Image (tube, rainbow, N blue to C red; front, side, top):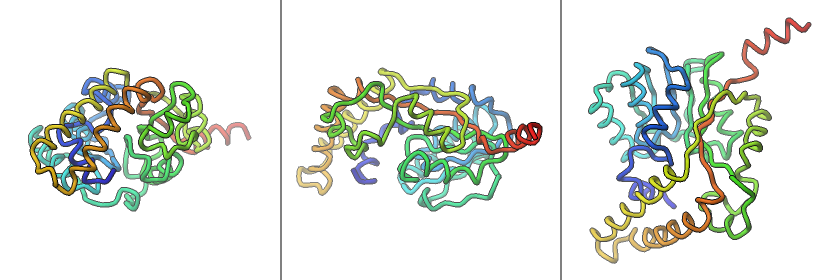
Length: 263
């Protein structure tokens, strides 16, 4: 599915992941956010996390995304919430963006680990920008139980490979292998998955009703809609979970201090 198709399917969404507003704000609470903290969000979408947290907690945000459609929505939202002076949004390929080293208290990539070709690569994209002792937020799917081959073929984004995602415990193993400590998490549930998926169905259906049958994107959007409905109801709800995981770099000063004490 192309970027343009995402822009159509998610045109009605503020949060471009299977998260409710309540879970988004809970995530901010568990991160113990404080006024003046700086956050970098790669593949920020419409910037709902940055703008809502700036409004609630007084944080300062930088969002990077390749979609001008999403960034326009993010800037409009920042103005609506009165935080345009606290957040800024830049159009750039998140995979190529290089932030100032150690400049951010929170770094995040929520639901877009494809920017780093997977979990480990995305951690390495984010790590340099994180100050010692700061928090890294990764949004990632996980298997709730082993999925049959039919599910792997149907679930968009898995590339039909059984090891693209892992179980929750397997995801923990991947974090630890990358040198990260899991300190918190806020997981989506069946209802938030449904809201994210079903809102896309309605949005696409309405869009298809509004354009000519021979619109250049119409056939692909019809195919996506048919596939997405069936895959979600048949496979996604049973086998695929999603959550945001709060991490600390185990290679930071605290680890170094413990190692020196052991010596």
